[in-house]
Amino acid sequence: MKGMPDHEENMKTAVEVLSDVQSVLVSTGAGMSSESGVRTFRSENGHWREHRAEDLATPEAIRRDPKLVWEWYRERLITSDEIEPHEGYTALVELQDRLGCLTVVTQNVDGLHQKAGLTDVIELHGNLRTASCIDRCGASPVTLTASVLKELPPVCSCGAVLRPDVVLFGEALPEDALRRSLDLASSCEAMLVVGTSMVVYPAAALPILALDAGARVIEINPEETPLAMLSNVICIRSGAGVALPDLIERLRS
Ligand code: OAD
Image (cartoon, rainbow, N blue to C red; front, side, top):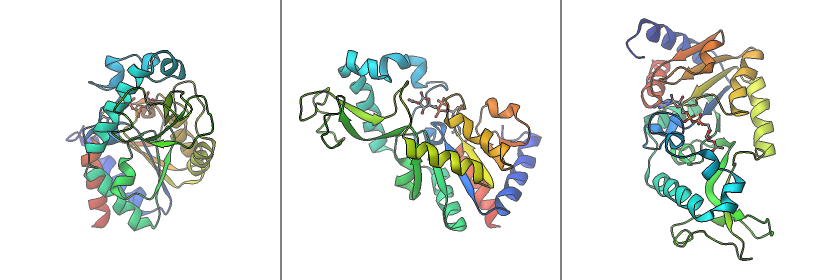
């Protein structure tokens, strides 16, 4: 928590690390969007406190009750249309400018990193911009707009139900996105891990790979996660919208 003696010490160490490296990989989860008004999955008020993942985020759920599943995704899509990136995102854009390039690997599907101006975003769990035929009929993905989602569930030109182009539980991650993330985690000099509970793999393995390869890992999360059990992780117990601008401000001066 901010105010604890460790906080200042850890902020200083994080700034030292970031001012000394060229390649930084940023790994984000739902907590990164929290201060923009997006619900997380497992924190207080998180989606999985209210719903069961099996009912909404599996291929079986879409086949069983596509309307129910799409009502949930439509609500999330409308929310993400209306939200704006907070100052933590602006701070990451400044870090990108400072370093010349910055890759963000995210589990989020809300598109906020791109909206903020981050140019190299790996979407490990897909995105909510498009939907595709559940039967893979070969039709092009459909851009998700309010009119496409007026009648639920949306259907493909072949008549089958559409499914969002997100990774559902039990599905493989996009191969290129995963390979690139693993490569970057193994080769970066520092990794910033922001707003993830570190319980969903393979995203949760990225900081472990980075640590094994000798990188410094900085975690920004108001709550403790399994990362705290690993030695050598710099834990900043604060929200992304405060900690990231604070870090970048200190880097500037
Ligand atoms: P979770 O909801 O599991 O975790 C969110 C994390 O963000 C928690 O550790 C919070 O403490 C932290 N947090 C909350 N507010 C924060 C803030 N302002 N700043 C920084 N951190 C904050 O979300 P993810 O780890 O992203 O997958 O969840 C991973 C995956 O599980 C999601 O991509 C989704 C979900 O089921 C699928 O749907 C496949």
